[in-house]
Length: 431
Image 1: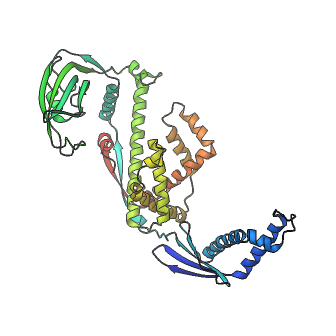
Image 2 (image 1 turned 30 degrees about the horizontal axis):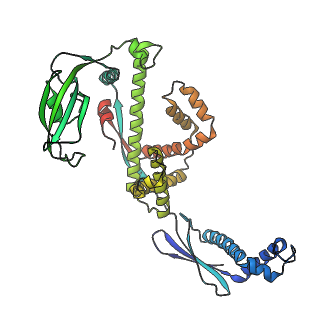
């Protein structure tokens, strides 16, 4: 077998394989003899069909089968001999039969050679989140608002009140699409409506009718309204004030805390705040590490792997959206950048895990499972059930070992801490 390899791109290789034809013909003849022993052809007894008849009937099919098998085997052997690592399936082109040799050309991409560098120079800023009594009070206020009731008052509306209205909006004297509603509740100061609209509702009483103008922002989602000034006529039906529940054992029970009352509920809330902050810290550190890893170690991504990942991301998106019709799927091109990033990071992390001989830590597996089950009432029981399920653990293992690789970079890079309040950290947009 003669093999030549040509580099036709950064990762693309063109490999030509040439084989003597005689052994192939011998295989074809041998296969035809086997076929002849069992072939059922009208006018001949089984096993007594002449060789030329068998060849005429089955020769082309048998030859194609043998050539296909030879091609696959020789391609695999050639790739191994040349120490190539294909990133995807090859594009095969066979040459015309010259009577002496069988030759084909395989064009494919190879996996990039990943050489990690400057890992110790990666800079990480680790948030140290502090939760104080004010943060806990704010959280309790939010929880009370979730259970709030509304009480009708006989006065003018003010910020924080809920005003129920009918409204009609007109642009150039015509009612526009979405510009009408009946008995529509608006909480003043909640930002659910445009500032001009809320301003127009401030100071109204039940039964009052009022007309005012509202300026739509230039970047408003409805093009026909963007930058326009519309006229609204409203009729107020009710003005209501928010009534917050007392912080007592009944309040705790409304959140399914049946034992320990407010003391236990407060403890649970604090622990949940800790978990949320810890998870966001972990996510932010992961994003910092990933960005820095890509920046310091750019890698060529095989098109085959990128397209495979794009299709996988498209399928995931369809599943999340509940879309089954492929015609309704989000365009494949939408996933180009994200897929390239994901593949590049996968290559880099795989190399790091190999180089540093990182193996999955059983304790970290248990911790990950406990984190996943933390929100359940029977958390320990759920964790034990997951731990005893090999399929579930097989799905979790790659996530854990990836986190161990990220932890390695954080531990060996240049990490500094930054103190931040709970409110500031949790309200900050995701990076």
